[in-house]
Image 1 (spheres, rainbow, N blue to C red):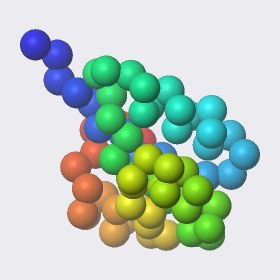
Image 2 (image 1 turned 120 degrees about the vertical axis):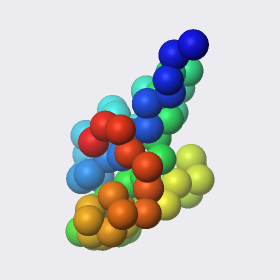
Image 3 (image 1 turned 180 degrees about the vertical axis):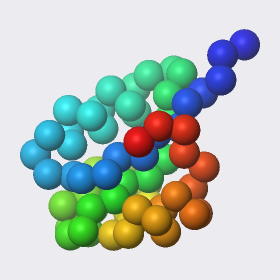
Image 4 (image 1 turned 45 degrees about the vertical axis):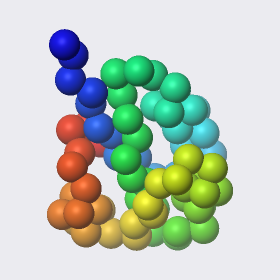
Length: 69
């Protein structure tokens, strides 16, 4: 049985859509949080996939169980 890796994305500018989509579609990966200094940049992805948004990656890592960033 494979472990599901939990991902967090830091930085949600234009390239974020290229990372968010695959991470929400893979069976062995789970996107658990988004982080950007400007929360509005992450909010569209967060709303679409039900993810929390952080502006401080330290806070995100304290609250979320993350395997890969």
